[in-house]
Amino acid sequence: MAEGVKPRVKVPKSAAAGEAITIKTLISHKMESGQRKDKEGKPIPRSIINRFTCEFNGQNVVDVVLAPAISTNPYFEFQAKVPEAGEFTFTWYDDDGSVYTAKEKIAIS
Image 1 (cartoon, helix red, strand yellow):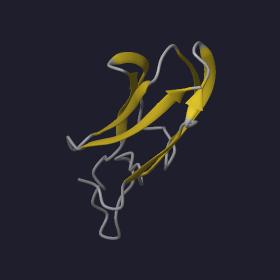
Image 2: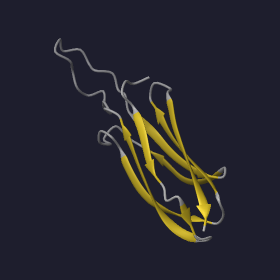
Image 3: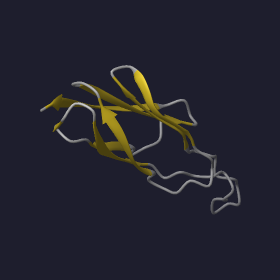
Image 4: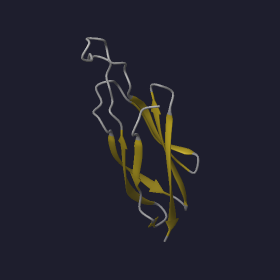
């Protein structure tokens, strides 16, 4: 597990049924490409978030596969329609097998 990894998400507390809302996510992660070398000239192992998913009440909203060229601390902003009250589940997958998850509920107003 990479050190200092912290997922953050911003979802409105409520929305009207059928409304499109803006969701913002950020995960603190160094994102090492595997191309650089340390002070002794040894390759620094690749360590990137290679996939990001978002589900709403168990249904897929976003599924993104990331490549080594992705920047440090990947940020995603996207819109999703909210048909009913429920919970968003955000998941980031790391090369080392670690999985980071955040959940946010939304109410219908």
